[in-house]
Length: 258
Length: 276
Image (cartoon, rainbow over all chains, first blue to last red):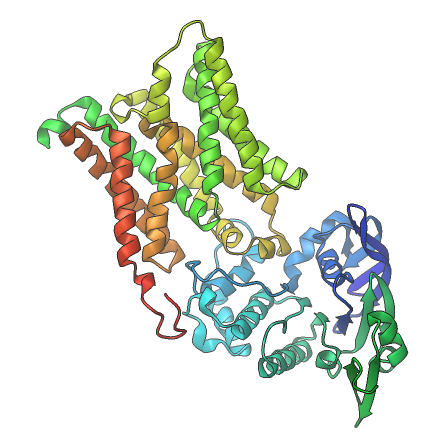
């Protein structure tokens, strides 16, 4: 049985359809890259996996449960939301804020103890923030904040990791570090990973499968099946060139080849 | 000072002010960190409708104020989620509606009761033993709930989206927090009055916010500052023959001004260069 199963899922905000007849399935440990234009439903898809948005039609099954029961498995899912600034004046250290990732799994009336603190320090080390544990969370730089969100998502030892444009707004070097970090964590922990991005080239080396989304699933499969100029040109409405070198594909958009 | 403490009503006032300072300073931390100051003001003003109804029906105005404050907290929470309205908009609706109800209730009374003013501006020196017992029970209840949901409220204040994504019942927790503000208002009505409650909800916590970067410490400092301002204000009001509630607010505001001017947060962080 798949970790995530969507069958004929339609999601609407009032009368605006955000996802239409979306069907796909992921096996444990698979890495899915999701790409699509702005407003194509990528974030909505992740929130539907979390059970934060209920479909108006279709069936969503995550970690063996569906419907109202999705809320019960949320603590087994790590979620890195779209980049948003952390309040620079909120009185909390990076370590304390990462520990908040354990709160839902701990349940009411239980506080994180020594074991959780040690785990938080290990997770911070894994994302390269070991030296920032005592800093104010809101004082981290943009790239550090993305790593911090990743660390917090990893705290409950999730089986599924959802990342919503984790490299948005960071420089090229940091972007590469974050992608490599996510790829390494996925392999080490056998995490079923859904990675939403606008940069196809960024995720191609690490994904098992790619989904091109524009309300409907436009294409779903391995990079060789999905990364084709005609498919991408239909999705974005602009000219696309796909280069191949040493078994790796690179997408160039615009009129560079014109 | 000894002469001051020899009066029973002064001893009641001291106890009452410590209770109000305690509950206000704790709930105030959430009010400041979550930007709930307007919701606090709205719920406080809703108490006016409850007090007026109490006078109209001849029942204890504090009891009807409890109903009005809790009801308004519930309506703000429900309207925010069910009608997709921002919380400040929902607060604006019920703030004015309950005030209008209060005016109508007063208009329906056969003769105007000047005791209503006592609830608008507070009368710390008029707090009775019965009032103190009710205030102590409500204060203990509020503090107990804050301790029970301490870490959930912390996550809610820091990142509501993550709290929801993690599976916490955020709608329910938001409603509970507004309910706790409502109970805090009721605890404080008799002592500082409907108009001045907001000051004790916001100023000590805002002052503590200027002084620390640690979440837990913010509660401790907020409490110390609130109790300090309350007792200091009470003594000053006795010595200068000024209204007690307003004098307490003056002292709290002075402490805030000093904290804002000399805040360690104005100093730059050595690591990142930001103001710490």
